[in-house]
Image (cartoon, rainbow, N blue to C red; front, top):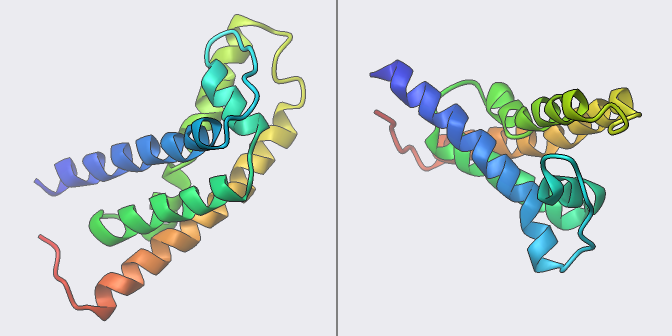
Amino acid sequence: MHRFWLVFTFAAATLLGLLAIVAPVWILDLRRYSAPLFPLIRSGVEGMSLLTLVFLFCAGFLVGCFGVGHPLLLGIATVALLPILAIAEMSVSSTTHNLWPLEFLIYGLISLCAVAGAFAGRFAMRLVKITRV
């Protein structure tokens, strides 16, 4: 049963992370970019703003509060799908993601917002002394 909740938590973290990346595209009505596979995600990455970082912190906070697993891994899981999707696009079109090492470094840096959120969420749950199953 614990394994199910662990998988569910990490799946939720990745989906919340993607939502944190693409939500500002709709909210701020950002420019839409073209991409071979994932144009909405590219638009979110290209138009990253403070709102994106706030959403990533909130995503980390939610999975830190209600999820199981180490907060560091939960925070990293929020952006873990971005490099995987970039590799998928690179395999389809070799002309995309020419600066992929820099791109992956940026993904690592923005994951720190979600990591901080996950630790804050875990701390908040301990503070109010809510026990998890």
